[in-house]
Figure 1 (cartoon, rainbow, N blue to C red):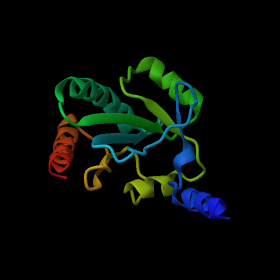
Figure 2 (figure 1 turned 90 degrees about the horizontal axis):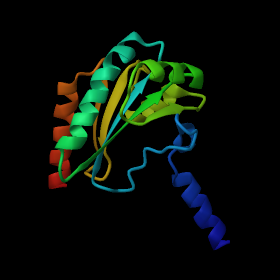
Figure 3 (figure 1 turned 90 degrees about the vertical axis):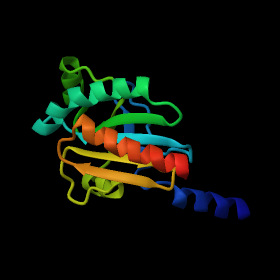
Figure 4 (figure 1 turned 60 degrees about the vertical axis):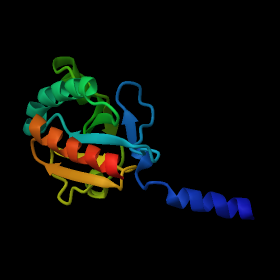
Length: 164
């Protein structure tokens, strides 16, 4: 009986939408769980039908490549989460080179999922900078984001990681 109660508690503690993300490249499950590590996550939610999303992705890709070569001490991970059909995402990625992992949301309620990340309206594009292992830092950016905005948010998260 104790094992059953422990398993039930574990299942109830799991993130509500954990199984709703897959890596676009191989369809394997993906997760935003940082595992308590001191790392920063940049999550950009987008769709191929969203013009501002399409405009910002080349700059986000360049920012990510530069960020990987620049930062020391605190790891920065980035993922683009598409709210779109696999074929549309594949076609888009053939024309626009994206250097960070691209995932797809496969659940039934993307607005509710985005709400859990801090997007109250479900508008796109939407970017959240998270550092769950550093005092639960979170900064949300609605609309098209610039590399300067990302850098400022990541610097604030890194400062939180150094002091937290």
